[in-house]
Image 1 (spheres, rainbow, N blue to C red):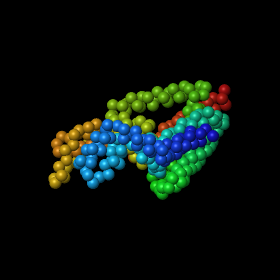
Image 2 (cartoon, helix red, strand yellow):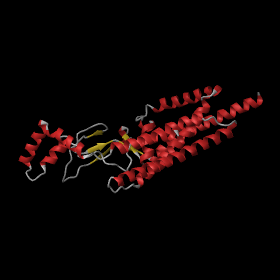
Image 3 (cartoon, rainbow, N blue to C red):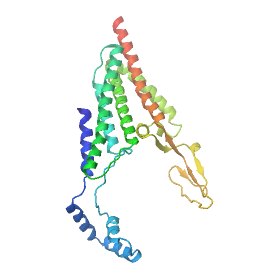
Image 4 (cartoon, one colour):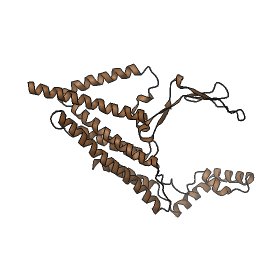
Length: 298
């Protein structure tokens, strides 16, 4: 149930936030904008400059009148409400794995990790399918013709895998946090911290950050600012010279365009996420085997 509560609330929020405005709401919003000085000035300027244009509608839009709320979007985007729903399920899966005590021995740990991972994966996959089918049904009821593309179903598949990986990590962390195994966790944490310190001088740090890897995993790639050696320059077209002002991660030594943008691929992100889950599981398995051996010989 805990995996379903927050995604359900977020889905209801999306449907409510994108509901069509009533005629009374549209009229009230229009009256609010028409009462402003900015609207009158923009309308006068538009009628003088573009007499054939629908200046009344253009001025309303320019000054923030809302003829309708945001339409239902049936494609996921990085860090939108759908992404928050997946992250909420992943966090819940992490807690379920940590609180669900495994059976004795290594086999009990592996069996419990597999069980929790499969159960949470199944729930997350069903929630993802129902999420987009429900939005599609809501869009049809509003008179639009929705289309759910392949990128949406890819998001659902990778989102379910992310939730399953969180379950494995949670199960492993739950074992490591019990009793004498905290010593093992401390040593493993120290090793990871030492590795991070060694990697930090090799800028940039972005590929080692979880948010970037989660985005790349769910959406088929994520862009970040690379090191100076990753800079690539594009010469402008001779017929259409391009003048670009330098900004974050870019430079323009001449009439060209240079960028350090690097794409973090889904494969690299999958290696990162699976690697962390695997390291935790391996550490938990090793610690469990050592503890079981001590008990037998004790």
